[in-house]
Amino acid sequence: MRTVHDLLKSKPIVFNNIDADALVIDALQMLNSVNLSYLVVKKDDEFKGIFCERDYSRNVILKGRSSSNTKVKDVMTNDLPMVDVADTVEHCMNLMIAHKARYLLAYNDQQFVGVITIHDLLRQVISNKEAVFDHSMAEQLLSHEEGRKIY
Image 1 (tube, rainbow, N blue to C red):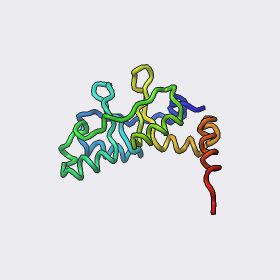
Image 2: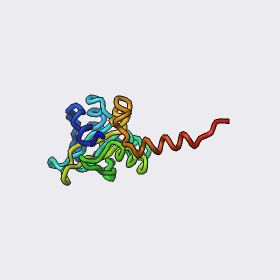
Image 3: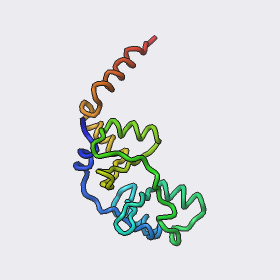
Image 4: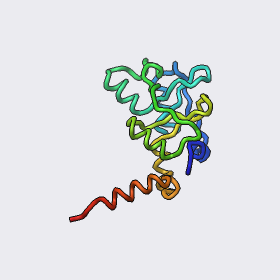
């Protein structure tokens, strides 16, 4: 079964870090240049949260703030679910569903090591659907399908 560690290894290295004191307009320009939906927010090389397109729409636009004078730290997300590098892809999917999240923060011994996105999980499912779910999940899906009757 694939793990968070496997997912992180398969992701390309990206330079999508931004300082917590940066302006939102600069974060938006960086989002555009790296062609990703999120940036990792740091202060003095310490992880603080993420800034994503949803933060911009909900915490800047809908609240009438200006991108040119609002700091990233004032609108970023810092309460995302966390996973360990040993956790499975299936665990990640369940956590995203339970928390209605699009991102998970990956840690290795309390050290931030990356972000797992819903797109990472979908790519994994599509490319290797047999290895994503463990046997118990397969049994649940099978028993659910057998219990359905078509009239």
